Structures are given as C-alpha cells and as structure tokens.
Length: 397
Ligand code: PLP
Image 1: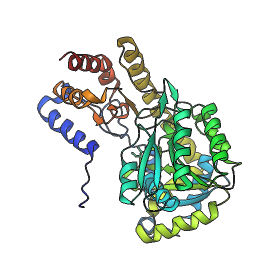
Image 2: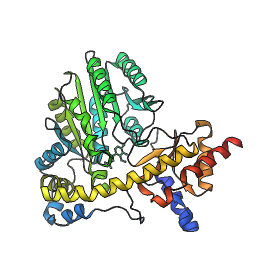
Image 3: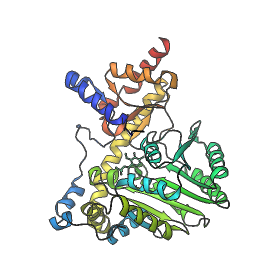
Image 4: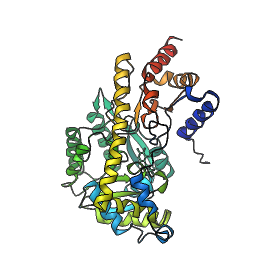
C-alpha cells in the first residue's frame, strides 16, 4: 500500500495563509505550533542565536563526536533535566527519541498505548514501523483518567507480555494539561507493579517542559524515576525545538533510565547508525554551550521567562473567557495549546464554519486546537465567544 502523508497542521496553516492574503488582519490564525511574539514575529531569542553565531564554522561543518551525541551535549541534557543517572542518546529532535523508543521496545504487530488526545505524529511513527496503537481515555472530568490508563495497560500486557505507553507531560500537546505530582505518583506505582509481569517502557515526552508556567515544579516527577522495578524503563524525549525555539536545528535526546538503560542505549545507537547516523553538531554545541556556561544560561533563562509569561497571559485570558461564555475545553493548565471539546458528529462542520468566520485552527479528531503560542493577546481576546457562537450555530442548524 502506498504511504501518503496527510498532515492536517500544514494544510490548516496553508488555508490560514491564503485567507490572510485576502482578508488581512481580520483573520485569526491559531494554527502554527511555533512561538510568536505579540508583534506577530517568530520568537528568536538573542541569548540563543548570539551563542550560535559564535560557533566556529568548522563546528557547523563537522560530524558530531559520536553517534550517541557529543559528550558535552549528553552532560548538558542530564544537567538540564536533573536526570543525573540517565544515559543520553542524541536524536533528530524529540521526534527521533519517540520513534527510536517505539522501534526498540516493541516487535512487529505489537501495540503501543497513547492518550486519547495526542500529537498526531505518534500514530504515523507507530504505523510506519508496523506497530499498532491503542488509546487510553486521557481525562475523567478535569483530571487524568487513571482508571482507563490502568485498564488499557493491563489489557496490552495480557496480550503481548510487554508494554510501551506514552505520557506527554507537562504542558501536553494539544490540551495544555499537566499532571499533578500525585497523578504521577499513582502512575509510577502502578507501572512498577505491572513490571512484575513483563517489560514496561514509559515514554515521557517533555517537548514543552521549558514553557510550563511553574518551572520550579515542572521537573518534580522525575524523582520518581530514581527507584524503579528492574523491568521498567523510562525514556524521556527531550527536544531543543521548543526549549530554545530552535526547531530547524533538529536536535533532541532520548534520556534513558532504569536497570536496562545501558542495553537500551546501545540499541538506540544501533538504530541511529541505521537511520540518521549522527545528529547536527552545531545544534548540540549550541545547547551545551548555553547550559554549561553559567552566564549564557542565566541570560537565556531571563529571556525565556518573558515568553513563559507571554504564554501564561494568553492562556489565562482564553481560560477566563471560555469559562465566562461556557465554551467547553479539555483540561488546560499551560503550554502552547488548548483544545476545544466538540462532539465528533459535528466536528467537521464546526471546523468549516470556523474557517468561514476567518478563524483558522488545526482540526483534530477531538476538536479544534488553538495554538496560543502563535496568537497575540489581541487575537485571543473574544476568541472563546466567537468559537462558542460557531458551535451553537452548527448545533442549531
Ligand atoms: N512531542 C510533541 C508532543 C510535539 O508537539 C513535538 C513537536 O511539535 C515533538 C514531540 C517533537 O518535535 P521535534 O522533533 O521538532 O523536536
């Protein structure tokens, strides 16, 4: 069967661009998953690119020091995340870390478990590697659905004696949910128990971690990875795409913890050699220079904190207005996105009607995704009411 990629993000972005050519500033474009400032410019941080511009050309030209990633890069990733005991394998973006995890924890026709609302490419990565997927219901009311998570994990363990499960947290794409520490504790307690029965791999995708509102607690749950059952492996998928808003550098990491981490690291390096060889050297140098030099790190943290605040302001306004007008959204706390809850039966019509009203979102199976990251406050203002009106009009029709 021919494989043809249908990417609903890029098609939505194209539609919004075309509308802007005709209707200009009337258009509300909340399609783009990259960070834009209040003036509508893509965020490019001086504290990042000044460092990049000082990287000598030979560093930009050469291969990285090893397939596993530059030693300084590995050190910087561990320090940054506070995961000192981990093994780090550099990957092309967070995407590489996700993909390599599916590939090396599962066999052909095994099933991987995703949240019911999730980043679309997980499915593409599974299917492309002949891996099936199943989904746990992510929410029960306004919190993480532990019951559904457990039931689905057990079901998969019953069927294939091994489990790989994805948790994209904190600042989940596309809802902006972040689990509480207590929810994480319950998840880890359960996975440690389940590991008695077979190999368990937890993929914690932290692509948006550096834009969580409260940086002091965003990494708290990592301490639960320190003491795990010997059959439990945790792979934290890290990326500089969002952290440094350096999407095009294609640098990320699989950060591996657990008794079998050493062996799994070797498997990932083997996969690296077979698919992408090594990862962009300049991007790795960029990250390690910023993290391992106190002045550069502080300058970056200060500049980034402005944008964390900018996102928080947009998210606070959208949440407040959604509540005021009774617009149902998935539980949201922080991050780049929020997603509106729409009955699947009218989801397609809502998407089309929003476009007619010059509101461009990414139409997900669960409802329209609102990229708060790319819309200035003035465009967020009033948006919840306009979306609510569209949903009501479709329901009435
Ligand atoms: N995980 C999630 C949930 C994402 O939204 C993204 C990017 O959009 C990624 C991982 C990985 O991105 P990249 O491969 O650019 O690091």
